[in-house]
Picture 1 (tube, rainbow, N blue to C red):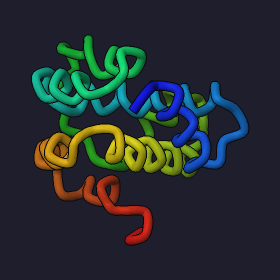
Picture 2 (spheres, rainbow, N blue to C red; picture 1 turned 30 degrees about the horizontal axis):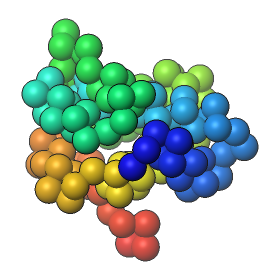
Picture 3 (cartoon, rainbow, N blue to C red; picture 1 turned 90 degrees about the vertical axis):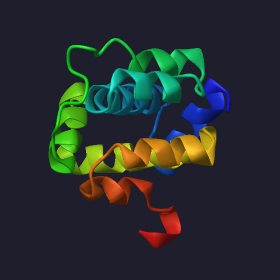
Length: 129
């Protein structure tokens, strides 16, 4: 999936008013994910994404594999975007939903295996939420 298409899908899924909001949601979510998973896992995921997004997953070696709850994940995204927690939940879910379409199913499943079960709601299909 190309970068512009990814942004457009996140914008539509999260019902955002602007492309810039979608870009901030993508960046905040992927940076937070990049600090949550090990660098080799982040690199594998990044290899299937457009360069504009891949860079958000990388460069967090000093933070990698931080063990924080899903609530803390949402709070981190909210802080990075400068938004409230409920909005961050919507943004994160939108990014993960589009991410599931943008990478191979095996890669998405691989990311899932490296996150605690408490993160399962991020991997649910929109119809099962």
